[in-house]
Image 1 (cartoon, rainbow, N blue to C red):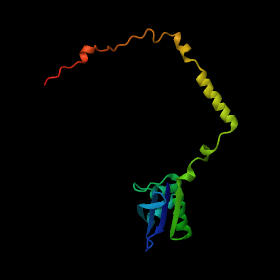
Image 2 (cartoon, rainbow, N blue to C red):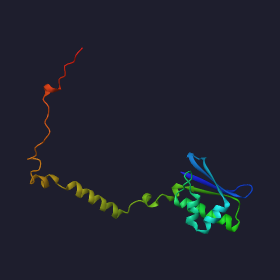
Image 3 (cartoon, rainbow, N blue to C red):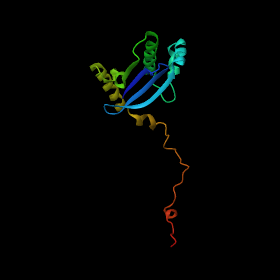
Image 4 (cartoon, rainbow, N blue to C red):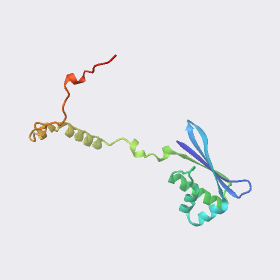
Length: 157
């Protein structure tokens, strides 16, 4: 899934606005949420560091994953301290964070090891291990099976 965050100041420069868009349909980003923060509160949170800023930016309505939140916080800090553009976008694609190792083919030696492990499992003779213990031979069930007669029910018309 792709997500886009737009970070900007409002027209009078007193509020920071963060808008979230998500790809709900293929290749279509839909507006999800907008949060507005007073710039004074954001600047105060920045003094506590990036973690404090992330904690301030996250809300019940907008709670991005930590990698996204860190990038948003870095962008906000750059906007406010370095005077970067008033409107910036961050686009995230979950496919970039999926482990690439899962898609890599196995080496030939790894395939042979897996085949031998499977063969060992299939060759094992489990019955020999349990024949000596007489576990099931002496088993007495506490459940009684009902007679066939008890299952017949007289229907009253």
